[in-house]
Image 1: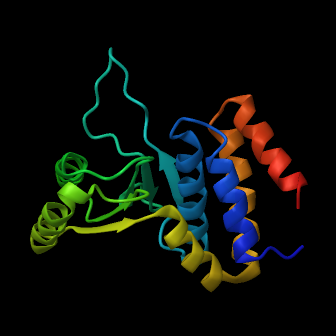
Image 2 (image 1 turned 180 degrees about the horizontal axis):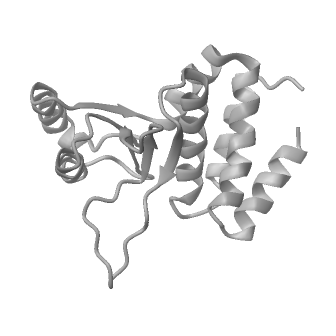
Length: 185
């Protein structure tokens, strides 16, 4: 079956709105970055960072880590379901610098307007010291990637969302919502 860019994005948008938590957008980002990794062969897999709890604080946890065959993180992804702030940027710069991760994506629906200039300045400074940071809204990046990748990439993306729902042991409501969306095609 053929899947258009607009259909894939509509499914993603509808799925994102199924929950009040960050989980749907995290799953969508994970599936998109795994699809990119498969198509471009730039990394072997996408791992979800462990969610820290009160008993076991781990300061270097990132939302998604794109890992090569040798186990090295070649790209980190921080996912936000709210506006990106300067505090978010500072924390991620520290975490990724400590782990020598050079390529980092922030996936956020927008940038906090009050912090926008400071964020741009800070990311320019980080670039000068050897790290590259990119700020995207999921749907902007997904539109471009899924258009460039063609129908095969769009189908793979939809498949990967389902696989990540199963692999991450998510709430049944998330899996049921995704199933209903696919059945609506």
